[in-house]
Amino acid sequence: RSISGSLFFGALGVLVSLALGLWTDQLIRDLFARAEWLGWVAAGMAVIALLALLVILAREFLAIARLAEVEK
Image 1 (tube, rainbow, N blue to C red):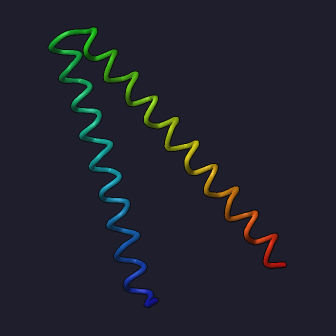
Image 2: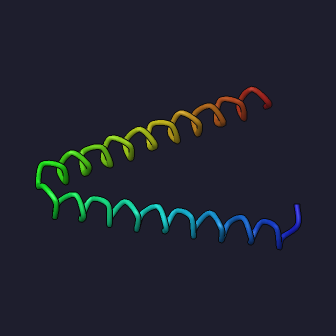
């Protein structure tokens, strides 16, 4: 891989992550403005999604660590 390609995809990934974060924040704020219970439901779903993402990442890192041990 070229360094410019890695920089491009890294920067693009950060921009997409920031955009998703800002979109989620605005969505939750709008739902709170419309009805408080909708805001709390959306905030709860965002927390559940974040926890699920952390579990997925942890499982992937553990799987990669196991593969590294098998290769030794």
